[in-house]
Every structure is written in C-alpha cells, then in structure tokens.
Image (cartoon, rainbow, N blue to C red; front, side, top):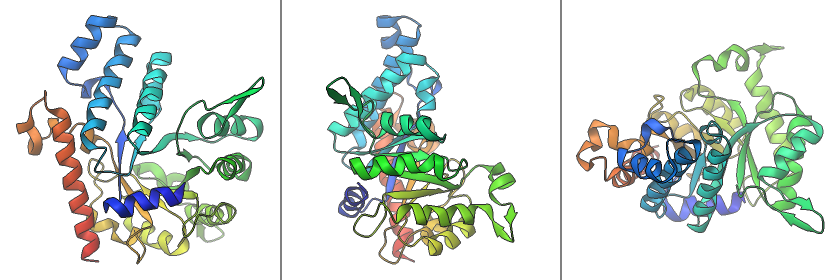
Length: 308
C-alpha cells in the first residue's frame, strides 16, 4: 500500500492529506437544517449532516490530493449513526480513488490488538465468508504497549498489503511529558523510532516501509533528527496550519527524493470558509473554499521543498 500512496503523491505533486475531522459547529447551517428536517435533532440527524458535509468537501478536492485522514473519535461521539457516517465517508473516498488513513490511534495487546487490526485493515470470518469491517488503507497505532500491541497490525498489513503509522513524536504541547524523557541518555521518542524501523523491515514496499510513523509539525528539530534515523519510514505530519506548523519547518521531514513525508491539515481545510482569507466564498460554497485552501497548502509545501 505504501507504493500506491507514494505513486499518488508523486503523480499529483501533492504531499498532503486532508483530515476529515467534522464537528457539528463546523457544518454550514443549510446542511444541518436539511439533515434535521429529515431525521430530527437526533444522532441520526447529526450523522447525516456529517456525511453530507464530508461528501461536499470530498467532491471538491478529491482530484487534488492523494489521501484523506478521517479521525474516528469525531464520529464515535455520535454513536452508531456516527460510525455509519464514518464508514460511508471511507467508502465514498475509496470510490473517488483516495488512500484512506484511518486515524484510530489503537494500541492494545494480544487478541484485542488483533481484533482492532482485523476490524480496520483485515477481514473477519463469518461462517464460510469473510468481510472487511472498514475499508481503511492505513491506520494510526499507539506503540506504548510495545511489540505486543504493534505486531498484530504488522501481521495484517503483510497479509492485506495495508499499512500503519506509529506514533513517535506527536504534535500536542504536552507530548514531551513522556516522549522526551531520557532512557539511558536517549529520548523515549528516539527509542520508539528505532523500533518502528525494526517493525518496518518486515513489511517493506519498494523504497519505503508499510510501517510509517507520526511526527508532529510543531517539533521540527526532532523531525529533522528522526528523518535521518528512519530513511525508509514514511512520516505522517500533523500540526500544520491550525496548530502552528509551517511549511518552512517541514522540509527536513522529507528525503532528498522529495518524498518520505505527507503533511496533514484538518481544520485548515474543512473549515476554510470560516477563515478571513476564504470568507468571500460564503457558507453555501464551503467546499469551494476548502478546494482553494488545498491548492494553497500544496503550493506552500511544494514551494518550500523547491527551495530546500
């Protein structure tokens, strides 16, 4: 799967992924009104509004980008109707030819970890038939239970040609409380990075591994160091835009081939119409505002890489 992602990034010259992380407060009034008229002010109404909002954005941007990253918690808060919206969103993105990175941040042990991996990346057996619970191509994985928590995902990745992105150095302000702690003089995030390389050697694509990592845009010095430690590991980079990460800070996350990283923006894209820069589009044309925000993001990042 990493080969497919890399090809799409190269073909589009767009090392970006759009985070589909909807909140009801992001959704234009006309979409909410239509959903509530049909389903009432219910969880079903919320799920329908989320789905229609996502569909509009995907229709506007799918030809520009290689991948999307739906954050499952934003859907789970609405219970089963929210998960239905998550699944419909993933299936629609798949129809549009997009790579889907499920931001699920799972991490458990043994059969539980295996069940997460099966549900999101693999196939579950029901009698004589097998089914895919969801249709993601990659998922995010929390490594802090060790190899017991990650190996089941790697095993499914090898079986299904799928991939994972393992949390190494996250973008949030308090990440250093644990991730920066020294263990025998080495930061914990660096020890995790070394394990990511080890796990990835068992699941290689042509150049890069199907086992990638997450390194936040808000920590460029650590990102530069980690890039050197993990030359064949693809880096998923959250924190661009709304969290303060700048394109100029991210050039060292990429290898000399111009590949090796994919940068995420969520609010900066899906709520673009609320920003002063794109306000002229108006609420009705929220998806057109998102399209322009994607174009601007791609130009920002590729421009910074051109000057590397």
